[in-house]
Length: 162
Image (tube, rainbow, N blue to C red):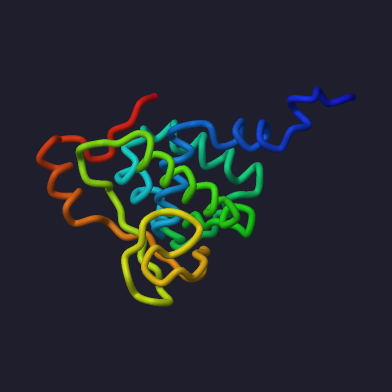
């Protein structure tokens, strides 16, 4: 079977994979090192069926792997695979775009810490403090204390569209 030019385009294929708000929220939480189903559900606000279906899709395409961490009852951790970690540059560029072109008066819900210099940096491919390249091994996403208090006050923790 022949693929259409749209399907052959890597941009279209990637967009069709990650172009779902729930997918991106789950990916964000996995980047922040939330690994348990309950953590992912709480931090995204996704209903159980939505979270289950997105995690299954992420596993089916090789972005997430599931491993047991408890036997009774059986519970799993979800971790990004190499392919999942490879989405970090895309996520950083989406953050940078949103920050620049889609401003919001509320504080961003997370901060990016460049582990090499220890400083908080803006999204992008390089640290805005020291100029070194950012990658999944030398950065960490952290909750923004300013945003946590505001989100609770506004009653918007974990809310997203269906």
